[in-house]
Amino acid sequence: MARKRTLPLIEDFDNIPEEALVPENEQPYKVPEHWKWVRLSSLNKYEAQSINPKKTPASYFFVYSVPSYSTGEPEYIAGEDIGSTKQVVETGDVLICKINPRINRVWSVSNPPDGKLIASSEWIVFRPTIGIQDFYRLYFSSQYFRQKLTSQVSGVGGSLTRARPKIVSGYPVLLPPPDEQKRIVEYIEQTNAKIDDVIQRLNQYLEEAPNRRAELIQAGVSGVLTKNWRDGRGNSADKSESMAPEDARKWGSSQILSRKHPKCDEGIAPSISSSELLEKSAVKKSKKLPRIADFDNIPEEALVPEEEQPYPIPEHWKWVRLGALLKYVQRGKGPKYANLETGYLAVSQKCVRWEGLDLTQARPWVASSFQDLNDVRLLREQDLLWNSTGTGTIGRIAVVPPLRENLRDRLAADSHVTVMRTTGLLDSKYLFYFISSIHIQGQVEDGLASGSTNQKELGLAVIKSLPIPLPLIDEQKEIACLLDAALSRVELNMELVQEVLDKVRGLRQQWISAALAGKLA
Image (cartoon, rainbow, N blue to C red; front, side, top):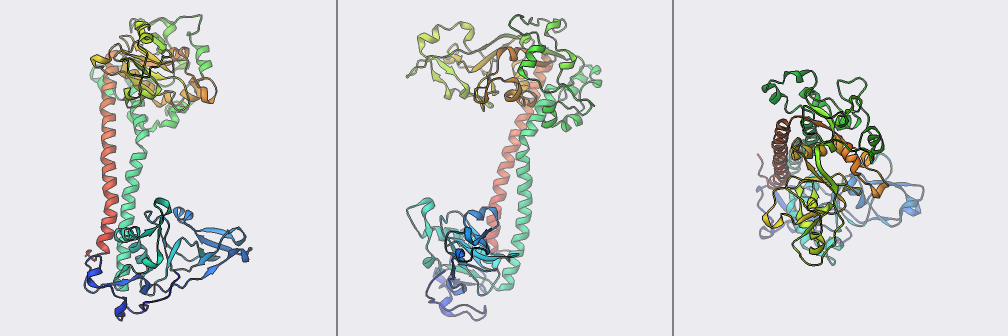
C-alpha cells in the first residue's frame, strides 16, 4: 500500500507507540483489557514494489488476481502472458480486495512450490509486523471490518466502487497478544471445520431430495408402498412379484432409466422410442384401442405383452395401454387471444407447473371464439394437463383442481397441452404420479417425443400407447394418498433443513465475532 509513513511501526506487543493506539472513544467494541486497538498502518510494514512481468517473458508467476479468488488458488502464468504491471507480494501477506468491497474477499499469500508471487493492483497488501497471518485474515473478513470497508468507498456504485487505501490505513485493527491470536485461529478453524461438516451434510440432504421424491413415486407406482396395505386385505399372492422395500431403495434413477431391476439378470425391456411403441401397440390410425370397462375383463388388445412390460408389479396388477383408460384425450385448441379480460382463459404450458395449475399465467380468450368450442374441450376438475411440445417444457403435468364457480366452463387448453380425462378405473392423481415418475419423465424428450431438438412433440398415439401399471381403483387412491403424505413430509423436511442451514451459516459469523471480542472461554 503505497504511502508516506506517518505512524511508527509496532515491533513489540509490550511496547506499542502511543501514536499507534486507537483512542478509547474510537474503538469499535469492547475487548479484554490487555488486548489493544491499533491503526492498520502501524502494523503494516509493506512497502510498494511493482513489477512488469513482460520484461521476463520466460519466467512464471503465481498471480493473485480478483477473478482467481473464487477458485482458492492463484493463477500460474508465464510473464509473456501477463498484460499489466503487478505488485510484488510474499508469503505471509494478507490481501484485502479494493474493488466492490461488498464482496468479502480476503486472501492469505502462501508459500509457492516454484515461481514468483505477484498480485493485481486491486488488492491492498497487508504485511504484519507482528502476529499471525490467519488472525488478520479472519479480522479483515469480520462483520465489523467489512461494514467499515464498505462505508467509505469511491466510485459510482455497485461493482465500480473501491475501498480507498489511504483511508483504510487508518482503520482500527484488533491486536491481541500473538499467543492468543494463535489460540483464536485454532479455535475458529476447528469450529469452522465442524460447521462445514454440518453444512455439507445438510446440503447433501437438499441435493438428494429429487432422488428421494423419485424413489418414493417409483415405489408407489410399482406397488412397494402399498405392500402392507395389500397384505392387510389378504392379497398374499403379491409376495412373489412385488419389490421388497430394500430393493426399491436400491433401484435408483439410473436403474429405472435403463430398466435394470436388481432381481433380473437380463434387465427389463430397454427404453423404447415413440416409433417402436406405436409399432408394437394396437394404437395406430387404422386401429382403435378398446376402452376397459371391467378390471376383471380387460380386452387383450388393451393389455401390454409381457416382453414390453417395463418393470415388475404385484401379481394382481395389470399392465395396460393408457388410452384404454381415458374417456377423453386430445390436444387443446389454438386460442384467439383478447387484449382485455373476457372471463375466458387459455391454459398454456406456462400454467402447467409441477406444483399445480398456475392460472396467473393464463391469457384471455376472445369470448365469441371460446363459446364456439365443443363442451368436451372445457376443462373440468381432475382433468390432467400434459405439456406436449417444446424442449424444457415438454413433460410437465398438472391436475385441474376444484374450480371456483366463476372459473367453471371458462377454461380451455391451448394447442401445446394435451388434456386427459380418465374413466372410473383410473384415478387422476395416480395417473399424475405415474407420469411424474422417472420411468416416464426420463424418456419424454429422448424417446417418447418425436421431432427436432426445439420442436419436440408428444403425439396422441404415443400417449394412448403408453404402458401403465393398473391396480384396482381403491389401491390407486391409497397410493396417491400415501404419496401425497410422504412427499409433503419431504417438502416439510426440506424447509426445516433449509432453516437449520441458514441458522448454522449465521452461527459461523457469530462465533467469529465472539472470538474476536474475547468472549470465548
